[in-house]
Length: 113
Image 1 (cartoon, rainbow, N blue to C red):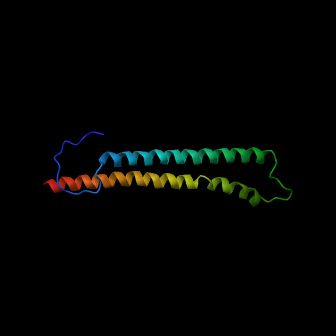
Image 2 (spheres, rainbow, N blue to C red):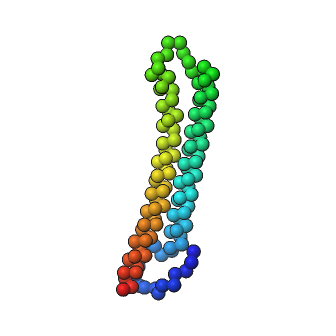
Image 3 (cartoon, helix red, strand yellow):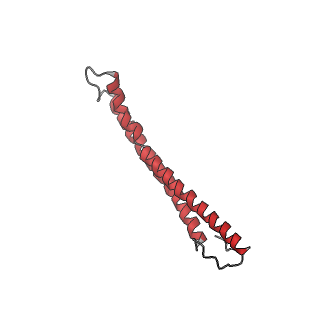
């Protein structure tokens, strides 16, 4: 990143390496999108495989009720939820780091005055 032109103060802040915090924030954001993409891809692949098997008649049994057919689909609707939770958690970490960095910068500016 760029060096700060502001004068140094004796304020012992939380983050001593601003560039390291920004890099960690970017890495958390990248991992969030990677986790979401992996979970969505695997969910889509397994759902496609299930639909091929379901439409070919592999899962049909004589005397099945409509609720039994619906119960076949529920695991595939729930499968991407962990990916969404990982995505949300990593995005929270990314934005929390940026907010904490802003708080420290504001505190340093206030200490100079």
